Image (cartoon, rainbow, N blue to C red; front, side, top):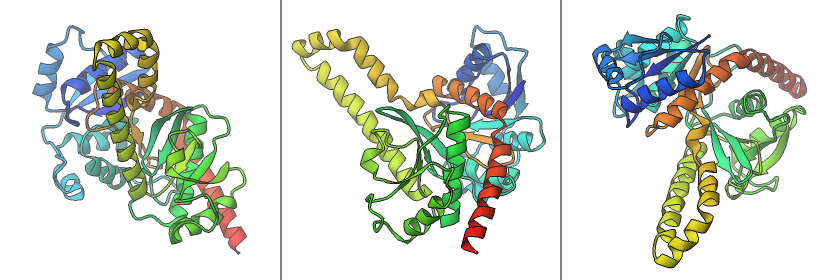
Length: 342
């Protein structure tokens, strides 16, 4: 049984979407137990509005304080010890939960994960990894938010963690790994990129295949896309904004006149399937890899589907025992790079 701590207060659609997602996940998996963190009275009120009786695999932990997006993350984590984020993380640290899931303040979740749980052996910095839809299926992008100012050895580790995550959890037998750059030629890139490339090339089992330009990411040109968090987060937000805008434009175009509406009826099912394939919520949340305990961050506007999928994502992660392999692989890579440099 996998125990997951859920921040009921986190996100724009809280608490309703989080409660709905929790109940949906319990229906979909019999191997999940959920601990709901938030004001006890509020959670009980929300549960009473739903026809489903509270499951025996559902418990409530009173956490009356709330951390907003506007608060300084480290200060909030330090002072608001009764918040749903801090108490949820502490449950993981104490071994009462296997994972913590939140759609709340990104800064507080990322800072809290590192401050309260710490890193597993061998990890220099934990990256935030997210699955993005592409024309050929999906790709894993990391770092997309945790380490804005990165060092070459950190990005090298991000690549290894992404390779293991893709192989163990996403079912890709031999993931291709590429480094984001402004061109594919060896001489292109800033000092950071030029320092990372030779390190990646020294790891023969990594699956590193060179540089990737941003325009090739939606095509599915790599399974694992590696970069620093400043670049990754900017790319991710542009990606999401462009996708949302295109969907609105398509919907507007096919309903603009009678002729368009008739044509839309003919392709309705095919179009619906195509648009669904670019719905990032079906992949769940973004895990902060390399911590002593699993922390997953959902989008701030996460709805029932994303929360439910993220809960099942946590279950898969825990059952895969990914942290053990991460630690061993990173320690092995560190030793290999030292030997080659020596």
